[in-house]
Length: 326
Image (cartoon, rainbow, N blue to C red; front, side):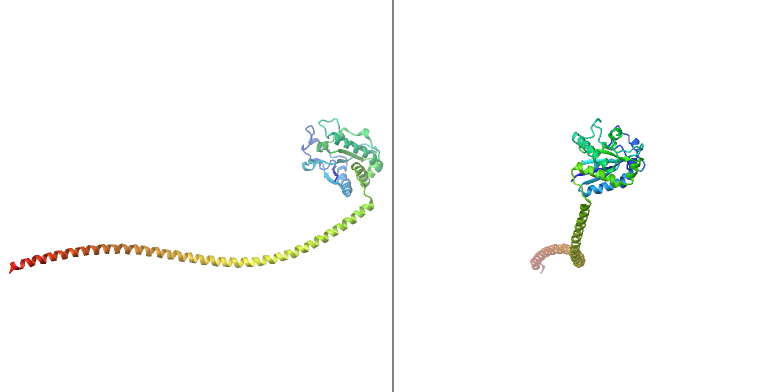
């Protein structure tokens, strides 16, 4: 696909900055370059949309820019870059076109792109004046055209030109200003010849429009069927979601109940644990008392034995004394 970038001269120039410009340019001076009376609005509202649409109709990829540098746009290379203007000075009938100045250093374009820009100029000078009925004037091309500030923006491999379509204050220029279709047709034919593209006839345009309508209708039908299928699928999914929501609610209820039972069990376990600890303490206490009683019992037993032995000894002693007592 061919790519063409169209600039509407002076449009939004008051907002220009130094971005993209060579160091010797003055953005403050350029801000004042608002063009001839009505020039930028005519190109933005009348010329550009018509030329854009005609180029799109033949398959050209069209980019539109104003006077401001845009990194995304100008980081690309194009098959052609054109800047549209009309000249309000003087009274003579004229149109003009210029490629970048070859003597400006560093070069605006490489040799191949410069050569292509000059080739387009030659084609345009052959086609455009014959279409619109005004003479081309190479002799009054200005230094400002040859060193047009926006040439600074253009990629090194992109053929670039600036066009002065007519003299705004001349009778023929005034007619062309009121007939932008004729101006567009001149540029359009020159661009197609330069790009090697075939012009689309009115009949072909109508057929293309009808074909596009049929294609769009077919696409709409397919999209409607897809939407219907998606609606059915969405309905099924909504049913699944409802079912899952019910299941989830039931699971949440069971989980809540199980959590409550768990908490009760934990509470009961904690109470039982406290009781166990109390019983263990009581067992330990009774065990201590039992041990003390056993020790006392053993002591008592030992004392009893000792007392028995003493009584036996005492009895024996008394028995021995009885004879003497008599």
